[in-house]
Length: 122
Image (cartoon, one colour):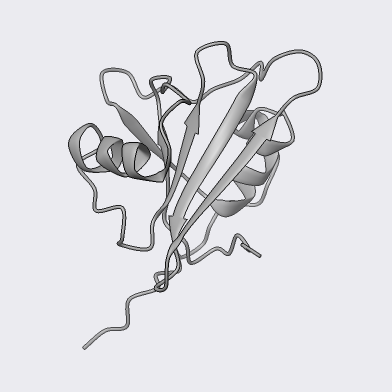
């Protein structure tokens, strides 16, 4: 089971992706379009063109997780934009709001006082 924690780096692909792609195809999108290593531990979030489904790709050290959520009716009304960028970073609680069909920019969460990072200082 995947758990979203504040330490996770979460990247959302702004542009829609062809959901006929599997793990390898989405990994290629991570490398080529988002300029990130899909095996870095980052959680990658994608949506389809019709905005009816979301896919999450994550690597846990042993293998890939591919999660898929398709709405029964309607569409995801909000999707992050990043101007001219192809990706946008979200916090864990913002992804949870997005997965519930909400707008993470409109949440009233407390601001982060100090970001938590998963890398220890050497």
